[in-house]
Image (cartoon, rainbow, N blue to C red; front, top):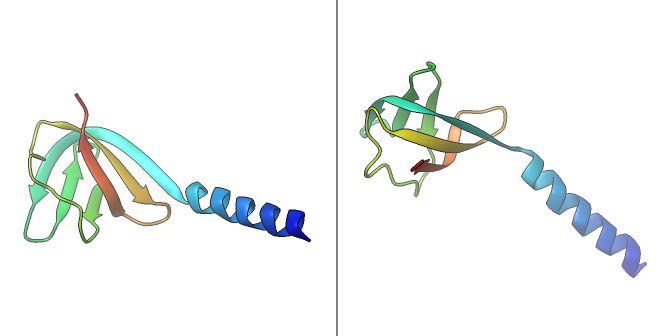
Length: 80
């Protein structure tokens, strides 16, 4: 029984990470009021609550981690 529970928890952990996507690109525009970041590819991501946009500006290359199937960015970071 303990093995079944351990397998179930491990499977659930793997599934939760499977629903995250990543994008990388150059920022075209940032709308702080709407909490959105548009990449030069045309993709627009909405920053989730708690995601800080400070330092994110046009011309910077960023990595965006988002919830698969949405444009909800859970992390936006500058690529050095």
